[in-house]
Length: 129
Length: 396
Image 1 (spheres, rainbow over the protein chains, first blue to last red):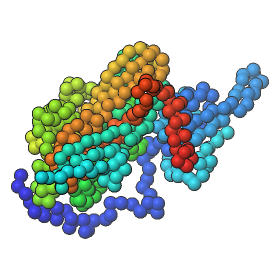
Image 2 (spheres, rainbow over the protein chains, first blue to last red):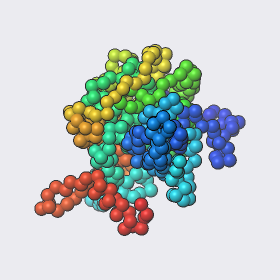
Image 3 (cartoon, rainbow over the protein chains, first blue to last red):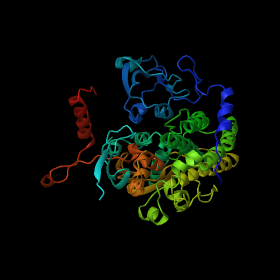
Image 4 (cartoon, helix red, strand yellow):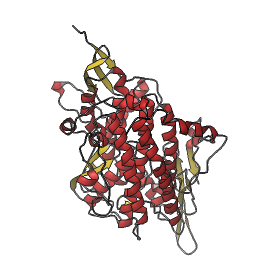
């Protein structure tokens, strides 16, 4: 291949008439992808208390505790669980959502929230009751 | 008579993006001798793996490196799969290969930009990084996130592709395929760029073999070594056809050319995968406990041959995990290339191997010879880290 002086120039001039490739975040925001693994959100009504998410979480960011145990009229035991998610530790891998065996709907899901920065670490401890 | 003196570079230096330490013996502008000290970057990941279950380890090892996260994940997953005695279904294998190639594209485009930046060609850096966003968007669409895709798991991949995504992927690949020859031409014909990289960092073929260089560095010295061909994994070997790119230039220019041509080869691989994607499941069920045994898993990461050694003891936690990153294999040849070079060529020679110290570096515990060997468990190591930072006034 022979050397070509100014091989760059046509491309450079073309860029004079192009829109910027960047977005002025945080004033403008791109849409997040549908599959984004954001913040884990737990629904206590659906949780069956198997603690699979707690056991599998690579960042040890999930704590599941039993809140109450009530006996219904027909003799069935109904337990209610609460969950603490330490979002500052969360690695957003989505293993908790994947492993959750609750049916028909999973009790823990990752939403589309991604702007996790906070001034106070306490604000990143989220309790679902 | 010439006078030499020793110039220390690092472990903290503006020209280094990660901590490592060099001792250059210089005679004016010439480097007479180069020496390297490793061990400034310790994260306790191998030890951390022993304290966690396999499922947790796969996400921990993904975070060894931000650029080749998928390669680490694939390497660990396929090693553990071999110990478990399970095979991913064909569709899972194809998507696994697709992720590897997408990651190769993003890494090579990133590297081209960094190489441009290191030689003061920032326009090149801006253009490649802008086009890199195309592949980043594709990765984001498939996996959900821009880095740490979390796609691989034991027994296959975690997410499937639908028809719409396959269409978008093919469009994105076509756009990149049209764009890459421009970078190849620019790298090989633009006089200012060629003057800066041709003949710099010479690594002859025999030396590349002797010093066990890996990946594009060795292929740019005319050695056609590629794990995908020499030790086929996933779908490579018989299912997915591909070509190995080599160049006989043996210098930084050849490494630019090899990487640019490798991207063209990757586009072909991805198009083949997307056009011939088998139907069916993407993963099989994997057991939680791994039978006793040991294995070595190899993957051709973007930077070269990546090796994971895994020893299982029959429980749900590994006995030992060892990561050999491609950068470690490339250090001896880098030192060879630096000898006899100009001082001003240090950044580009080092950048040409695409070094990643977060992958490579390990801690060295230097204890009293009479004290014998020191073995630390995970908890001791963690406490040491916390105490280390507390002494420096950093709240853990």
